[in-house]
Length: 494
Image (cartoon, rainbow, N blue to C red; front, top):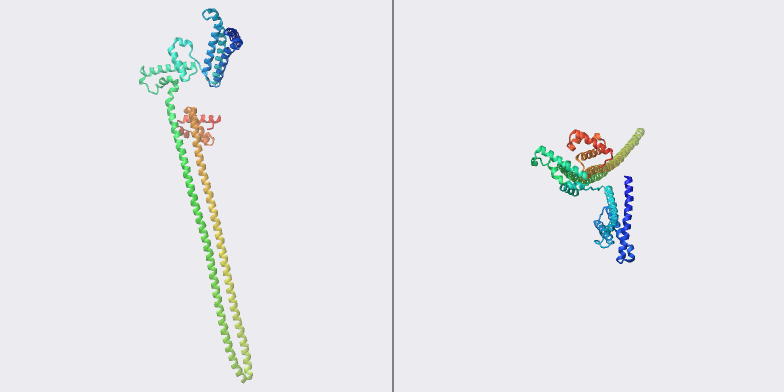
């Protein structure tokens, strides 16, 4: 092949050079005869090089995927022109047929080499781009022109690039039709509609297997549409649940604020009542102490009055006794001494009684002060308890707020997780639809997503779960799980 390639390249270059040289000489002389003057030297280059330039631009546009057939038509026009000009350089076309043919052969060699190069470049370009297209061989056109035209038409209309593939499809459909006639007779109207699909879809370029798989693909497409509808409804339900959760959160926050306000008002009311009760209690005890003090003062004044009256009576008695004692010298003196001692004892007794009363008053005053102190201590204790109640209320409100925030965050996270799962499943289904995967491949990818959702452990997804999700047997579920593990091993991620 390398030798043939080198020979073809060298021979083609030699033929092109000979053809271009001969054509250049003929067109130059023709230009001089027709009055082109010095432009006769450039005229052959413009015609022959124009063919190469137009074909090169055509190949460049084909390479870029934007072909323009007009360039090739112009190149063919230039080819016809150079052949005509070369033939005309030998004189009248019909006057010297030999010379005309000799001059016409020269540009044909050049044009043939250029067309061969163009064909090679186009074939290489199509092979690189994956668009290589075969034609129907000439011998088939000769042997079976009608079926050949039908095959050519089917290949061009349905995008069948390989001739071997077209032949294999025709053979496959023929064999299938024969086998179908063997099972159902010559009249295929009695055959089931699904079995007639390969014959109906033959003109569309579908193989027997592809045509027979159409009902399953239609069922799968219907199932996928139902799944997309269910996913959309699930997503709508998630959004509705999120909105309901937001409304419930707002209600809970409002109720919490109302309850907190109630606690605050109750705490303030309890504090005010405690202060008022303490002040009333202190005022009552102070009034009681003052009343007791006034009563003790009145009793002390009455006792003092009685003491003074007793003293006056004693002094009168003493005066009488002194008069009597004047008459009785010695006896009265002794009596006066005794009486003096009695008065001294009575005075001491009165003094002791006065001291006892004063001590009682002091004790009552101390008790009153003690009661006042206890009242203030009770008021301080009530204030302390009120402050503790306020702190407890504030702590309870903070705890409720934290619980509400945690509950709200949990609800939002759950809603977001469900939305992400629904979105991932929907995108995965859309990607599988775009890739036109088989039901087995779809099932394996769905099981792979279930494994990823379960933390990446294949054993966490049981065969019973796969059976219920895919509506398949346990053996098929085991195979789907094995395929899913293989997909995950090769890096599949939805």
